Length: 520
Image 1: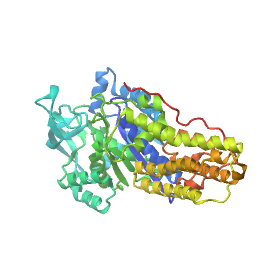
Image 2: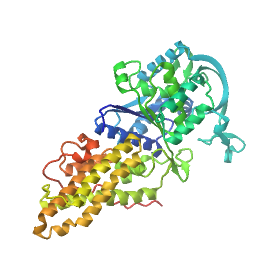
Image 3: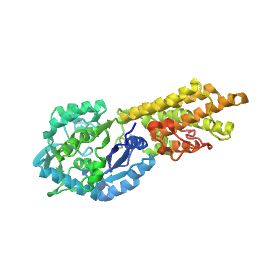
């Protein structure tokens, strides 16, 4: 059960060099489901997302499109990134852009503080730089190129050649925090999750950390270094600070104290930035480290990571225009083990939509509501004596709730949905075995009919509460049909089986209509 504590959760802020694909939407939905769950648990919840708009990659993309970097960022944010939130129904509390004044000013404050405390020095660096990652690469991060890049070393993530750069920059003394980071990982095993991500980070840091180049002087699209305006802040150092500048760092101490620390949901390809560089930065500044960094897996299409450059990127609208946002949210949260890679296919999406949403949950809701309308004139029946079958449903309501609460506490969203789906399956089996349509034929069975329909309705209401963070549109419709009190989101999710409602039900349209989809 929640203690009404604070829950601050973030997505990464996404580069505006291109439009979003379903990999970005996957991260957004995961964070949103967790945020909605905590809101319904009574926690003071704050969900942050946004866009990363500085750096060489943005500059080059804008130049290639004949506009300034700011014009490019403005265009992409308004036409692609903010609309994404509507497409997959994200209830974020804030949206930060790194070109906003609140971010730029307080990033400079943070950097100046580190400089004043002696954590920054001037140095020279030469290395292989991937513009796509905005990161200097170690030899182990490079692979032999193929196709047009045969004979060249390419980034293992982007499969494009790296550039040899030599710059005189400002450096952050990150190496000084190696032991403190290892102590953090050891004393708080949950700081980096899942276990595979924690092991990767531990192995990386144990090899020893180098100091981090945190400025660039070869281009000017970025936040100016406060004591040397010939340099701009390294885009990752800039971007990571969004999590505290949006939360009030440097300008609203009360807000910052009430929100921080945060839970960060990130893709595993940016895990090191969040689990190594970021806590080291905060340690240097004397700020508490994040509550947790969770690195989820990649979405794979045809065995490859989702990528626009490899033409495997799928726009979220391609899915939602056919199946709706609820189906998008349900599919990616249930079909993929959160924390591991997962493969997407249109055929699997369509099959799960039909079997689990349309036939499993949606048909159950329609049947039960229709029978209450038909056999009880829409009045919620009064139950008689409960049998063992009825008690079993009530027990499953509690068990499914407790299992889901436990799973969410571990950020295991897929397990939470699986726990709730036990109730979906048992209710379907209950209706089949109890045969209320048969009971309705004999007036002598009236008491039993009403008990069965009452039990089924209570189970449906519990499902509406538990599934609200995942499929908010469908559960809102179901809640209205059930005569639920207020909004479904007003119900405590950790006590889902205790929901309260009115006296009558209303007709319910199909929550997940049948779809005839072709994927030729």
